[in-house]
Length: 381
Ligand code: PMP
Image 1 (tube, rainbow, N blue to C red):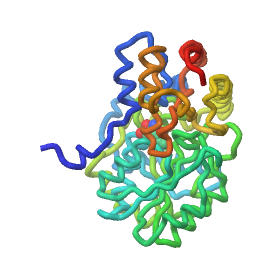
Image 2: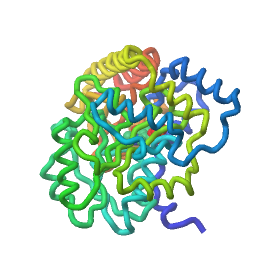
Image 3: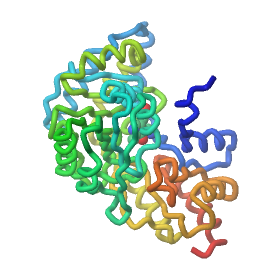
Image 4: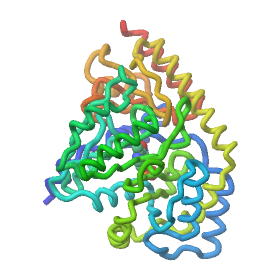
């Protein structure tokens, strides 16, 4: 019999829309965070060299030492933070790192505090370890920034973890360093642990990024190669864990993921050597795509009233259109062949919105805009 937990797990709508749209050649994809960039050539070469040399065995559960050292060097280079490679776990994507973090931190019935809106998969990870979700609303008029007083009220003795995601999916909001520091100390004071999902670092357009590790060692910090290096299907990510969790995390990783693919770990080392100018070029292209979409959204009269300053998503307010955001997403797909994600995927607070991803190529985005222009011409918004 299918378990209650499995029955209670909501589908990931962005992936469902992708599946529905994938049989149709005509669809413009603004639903998933799939970078239109290929990984840098040396990354591909490193993977192929590694495969050819037969480097395809299991590695240690926490990953190859050379990759963990390269990740530690990145924290020093980018943020001036000294991280012991012993605290770094390489995983097949950051998703298993999230699940292992929750499994290390949360006992059944304990609370995990999430923002609302939040990344669609967080509640599924909490439910997988029998935790309880408590959400804190983030408002469009505040640029979807956290309200620290609301977090102080939500975090209590039952709280095991507080998740922060900056730059954020689905809002694109980036939190300031001092806000991150306050969230870490509020969590710590209540005996809870901050989980900082930093997978969109490197994709900030107007804001400076800070890692939680600048403020505390008592945080789980998640990051990966999917977004910045265009390596979604390669499945490579990592977690930096507090020193007291290293052994627990290792045991859980040994049994569940065993290790990230060996040759992909070699590709990860090459990815971390990507020249900063190349990464800046990619970031600037995303900024142009964001601005293109922001302008279109304002023309459509669907402006959510904020400027997303990172990641490659933006929320669009469709409360003025007929039906709910599921209906509007359906209309966009069926009538304009543009795939978008209904906001309800990201919590109640996003249910009046659609999430548009500008990870797609510039021409694809322009075509999507033209199609939505034509469709909305029929509506009085
Ligand atoms: N965190 C966030 C906020 C994400 O948007 C995603 C991917 N959409 C992930 C984690 C997981 O990424 P991956 O498993 O590819 O590293």
